[in-house]
Length: 535
Image (cartoon, rainbow, N blue to C red; front, side, top):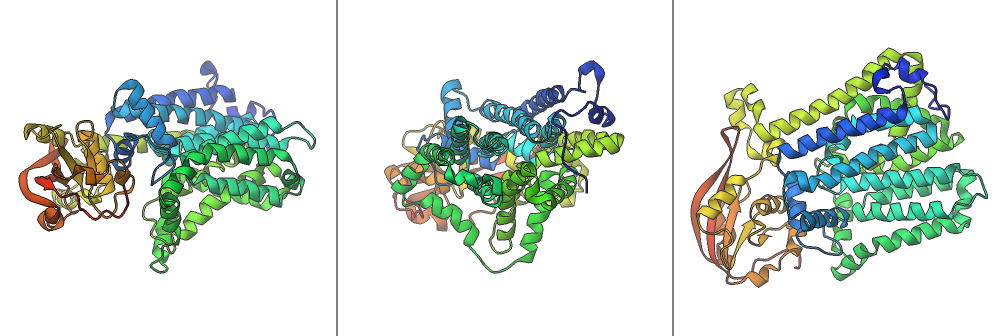
C-alpha cells in the first residue's frame, strides 16, 4: 500500500510529475491550483444554476423558507434562514439568486479543504484534496449548487475539522482554548445545518477515546466549552422541537429504525448509489487510501482522526439500508466521505512521485468527468435533448415519475393557466398539492400570490406554513400531477362543497409535453381535512 505521509512542505516535483504544472499560470504552486479550481468551479456552478429550475427538494425548501421559524419539521433551520434572508434582501426568487449563497459556501469549503489537507499532510495533498472534492458529483453538484442543507453542512464540517486537526497536532500544554471555542462554533453551525453532523461529532469523540495521546481531552475544560457553545447555537432546534412534540427528532430517527424486513438488494443499491454519487473516478482510489490509513491505525494521528470522523456516517447509513427504506438517499453518507478527501489527496502525492503522468491524467480526467456529469444533467433538465437519442416508444414510456431530470423542469405554464382563469391571487383562494415535494413545485409558481398547502398524508414542512383550518370557506386550486391521485373527487370531495375540472396544463420542455397537470377549482373548503401533523 502507498504511504499517505507527505512532507510538511512538499516539493514541486509531485506537481510537475503529475502533469498539472502550467508554468504560465503558476499551477506548480498548490495554492494557485486551488484558486483556479475555485474560480473555474464557481463559474461553472453559476452557469449551471442559471440554466435550470428548482428541483423537487429546492422547491420544497423555497416554500418552507417563506415562513421564518426557529426550526422545521424536516431539518434544522440554517439553510432555510439563508434562503429566507436572500429573498428578503434581494426581493428575488430566481434560482440563480437563491443558489448563489450556496455556491459561495462551496467555494469556501474548497479553500478550507485545502487548508485541512495542508495542515495534515502538506500543501500538495491539500491542493489535490480540494481538486478531487470538486471532481465528485455529489459535492460539486448537490452540495455546491443546490439550495439545500448540504452546502452549509459541508462548509462547517470542514471548518470544524480544521480546528480539531490543529488541536490534535498541538503539543500537550499548548494554549488551545481559542481553538476549542472555534470548534464549538463550527460544530454548532454544522448541527444547525443538518442532523447528520452529529455522527461526525461522534467520530471525533471516537478518535479521542481510541487515541491514547488525546484521552487527556476529557480532563480539559476546552472540549466541554466547545460542547456548550455548540449547544447554545443548536438551542433553537431544541426549543422548536419541544414546542412541537419533538416531531422532527422523532421523524428523522424513525427513518433508521423503520423495518419491513431485511432487503439485501437495498443494501446493494445503496452501495452502488454511493459509488455513482461520489464518482467512480474518486471512489475507487479513495478505497485503498482509506484502507492504508486504517492499517496504520492510531500510529498516525492525522489519518486516524479522519478515519474516525468518516466511519460512522458511512457505516450507519449504509448498514441501515439493509432494513430501512432509505430509498435513493445516497448522499446521506457524504459527510463521512468528506473526511476522506485529505487521505486520497495525500495518497495522490505519493502516486505522482512514482507515476506522475498517469496520476496527472487521472486528476485532469476526474475534473472533466465531473464537469461533464454536471453539464449533461443540467442541459437535459433544462432542454430534454436526450429524448432525441431515445426511440419514440421508450421515450413515451419514460413517465414523469421515472425521469429524475424532470424535477428541474419549472412549471411556468401552471402560473400562466391559473392567471388566465382569473385565480392567481384571487381573494380567499389557496392552492393545494397532493404531496410535500409537489407542494414545493406549486409554491415556486404560485406561492408569491396565494397560500399553498399540502392536503395529504405526508406534508412535512408544508404543514407548518399555514394552518389549513384558517382557510375554511375559501376556494382552492387543486394541482394534481399524474400518478398521485387516482380519483380527485373521492379524495377531496368530502372536504369541499363542489369540485370543477379546469383545462389540464401541459408543461413542456424542448417543445415536447413532458407533464400534464390536472387542474381543478374546489369551492367552499370545510377546513376538516385530516392532517397527520398539527399546524
